[in-house]
Image 1 (cartoon, rainbow, N blue to C red):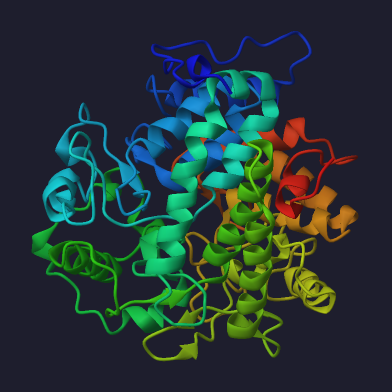
Image 2 (image 1 turned 45 degrees about the horizontal axis):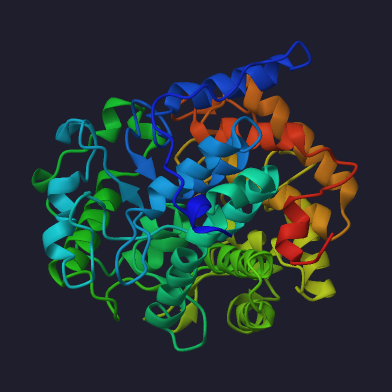
Length: 469
């Protein structure tokens, strides 16, 4: 690639992402309007009221949908996020918009103090971020964005600029976050895994002394019912964990909370396959990444598979044991191409069985065991169905030949997204909207499913497999 292309300036201003044609469906037009409303000029907020900054894995999912409207804007979404990467390789879970008032979201930049507390870890000086991370969907998103318009991508040097940053991100996770010593990545805060208040965290969180309620003010309760949000006790523990991590300079190591999570590691593996594709596109060797993805899959099976549960479970690293809770995270490894066939078949049975009810009592995948003692159909990740996890499982089902189930899940996602006004999450039984409406990744993944026809998955599954087509 020539140097002129690589120095192409980043687009500025509010470029029009979508000019609907007469053939566009109403759902398509509505989803595009959600993304247009969330665009800030350089990235997309998940929700103008509840989440007014840039979130890491939200932006990855948003870019996957945005590529169908404007490949240039999708590239910009990821470029903006990775411009805030720390020198140690981590991609922070929030990049703060300085024009948003401090009291609009908590924890705010003055809590994280990234440029000072994160100085030793290489936090950027010119932008404020959080100090924790989120699931590594980014390489997969970058590859899918490239496929949307390879000519534009090559002309702008998009993958040439993204690849070293994505490689550093994976290197950070693999080298600094193997806290259990078994080859898998650990999260050190529930927010890192993305499924914030899952019952899977209750046991390891019980060791954490909560921060006093008077020491923080929850901005989230101004935008949603307290019955749908994490409890004050949980939130106090989140604040304590984040403050302790900040106060030790965001240095990684054993702490009160360290968990090996199936979904987090699965998305790392999927992104390793995508990095292999990116390397080949750039003319570099890729076998090492393919081999690493397969080794990580074997480690995932060895450390997190629980035959009696019929799925993967989280491992509490400090306690040295699996957490006996069935969360949707334990189904996400269905996304992996080298998962043993018998395990994939078991996951499919578990997905449609009484614990998750897909195709029977539920149309989307609940975030937690329908029969679990902690199940709550409305409270955040303790039962409601989320669109990003159902999108991942739709691809996993299709990858493993379950086309009928994948088609039904796709239909359920599209219907529920439209009927709920692109809700953040929904009651798994009734599909009642919960949380914010007009939610970014719900709209984006709706667009992706509308463009990826069931008859052939030219982009998503191929990218995860790492094959050529």
